Image 1 (tube, rainbow, N blue to C red):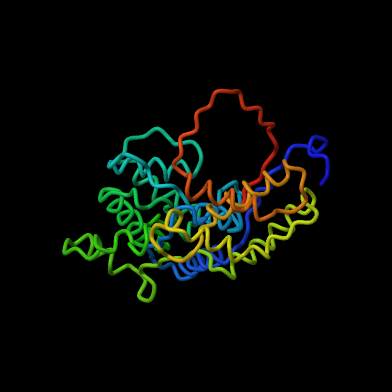
Image 2 (image 1 turned 45 degrees about the vertical axis):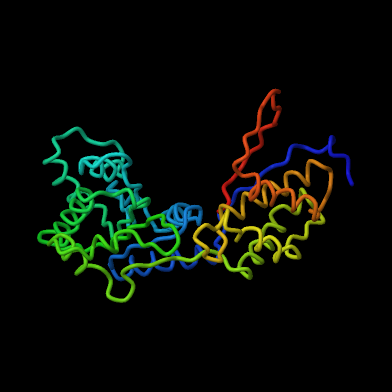
Length: 311
């Protein structure tokens, strides 16, 4: 062991990982973008949906042309929270183009169609779509209908990305309703993949992620060997406490939290590789003691370190 006190603070390396989940998730987003198709795309909370959307937008080719016009192939926003008003969704869409102009709502809904067409939007992604209301969905249909009609004639893809629990797919029962709005939504949904449930990481996929973490943290923990712990880590993270839907898959959030906690404690102990004791301690904390109330009666002195996101 090395002298832990002589080490700099443990630094969390948060970089985007193109995991198997992200490949599946971005694959359906790219399919929608390419074919201008409509989908409901669901996955467990903590899977990495928002990070995957952010990565896709960053690589979508958005830029300003020589005239100063913003070109935005993918327009991605979060669904408004705690409001049923369609104006809230309109403001969120407007905000994607910068400063939200002051105008009456009836004028703004016309302006939105124009600015979306001018930006050459090809795919519209709504994250946290489980929060959308009937009014929001009706507005999305109106906007996309107007974009597809004259004078713009611009059909756009629509991806409603939602958090789910188990195998429940948001909107599936809603869109099956007899009302005309839902009949129109169903007609626009993709023929082959209207409702998509993107699954988490398998045991073998977890092994690949552990291999990547070994490379990322090699400078701080030079003897790090995480792959040999794949089986127990996968077993712990598919415990019902962390996998209440009994999917038998691991979310990136749970895996990242487990690994960061384990690596931090290992580093602070002055070790250069994880051991079974630290792994079991982390598993116990996340599974058996996850709801434990800790009384704080001292000042915690935790040095801050720069981070980049992993997920």
